[in-house]
Image (cartoon, rainbow, N blue to C red; front, side, top):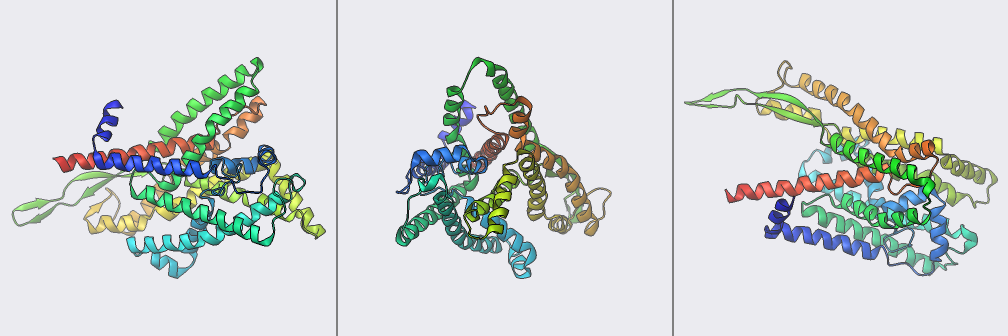
Length: 425
């Protein structure tokens, strides 16, 4: 490890990229502690500590929501816009054609996602302000006149766009995915505070629970590493071609199909979706319509039910794993490229048969990966049910994201080191 770190430090451009990324993460953490005026910070923290869903969202914003900071929404609106654009790409023929234009199509869809992020951020900013107005007897957020409300919404929206820009700058450095690293930084930044709270309520009767949680955390980290690195190798043979006196091809290699093709994106998508109904319900609970208030209160109570929340969370993670894999894994394009390059899977005819075979294998490989993601997502709820303790420093979802982001970042850094070794040769 020290040898690798020394090699990174001795590579000027890679060292510069890593320092740039660290600087961006420091800026993000500073912005997360710049509050918007007019909020009772103590009342806001008490509200978040008593609300499970908003507490989860606060974790992924790096404490930005709890501080009511200028980046309180984190990259949530951008993730929501990405989900909407990916759904529209599968439904709208024109967007599907654009997505098939290679790099140019990708940049165009990404530009649409950026534009959609702005109204999504403004809408979520107004929703949060409206929710906080109705909590704590109106003490959390004081009375805001139209001008103050507009300034607050514009500031919060600008903070989200700022984080989106920082995330893309980080991604351009090719030392990790920018959006994932921002979420990673938010989770890691909250760990010291959670450890402090755990020690504050510690007593000797909880020693067994602590041992259980530590053991489960270690096992989860090991399992995440194994599952993240696991892959199914499909053998591929390239036909031998003779041109003049030279022979080309004839090599045998393999096509790797990763067990978690979608990475941690399904969990991030599921979190964005599962917090939406109770947020809307909390916004509508002060409505003048009796049936609307009743429906909103029912929704809030339903999502506060641990069993329903766990089942809904598991199903969403499981479903999004298949959905996002279908978005990024294109067996028809892989089969077409193999056929153009003279490659084929032994025993499978090129073209349509290869496409069906790859899709069939991917569906079988994906099942254990989707089940694993779902179990890890609801792991904190399972532990609380088994042990009856609320003492959790970091949940399964957070562990999965942290470990997966670290693995992906290390992989990209190693790829750059290997590329520079080739350059030297």
